[in-house]
Amino acid sequence: MIDWIRIDELRDEVGQDDFGDIVGVFFEEAQEALENLRRADTVVTLLGQLHFLQGNALNLGFSNFAAICRN
Image (cartoon, rainbow, N blue to C red; front, side):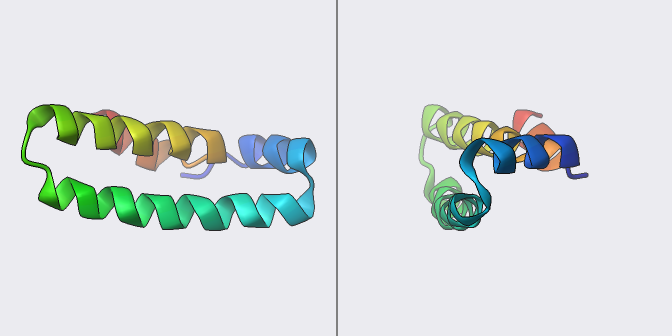
């Protein structure tokens, strides 16, 4: 599920043009974090990457993805 209220808030905060850039950066960073999850050799590294993904997902309104990371 996507939190459309959060997306609208963020778009209002940063503007339409910057919003697109922010979403693009999120997907780049999320891809890198997911790759890091596959290579994680400690629980601390694994939890750190999941926490990073959760926080960024919440900022963009991706509430279900954030919940998966939290769980």
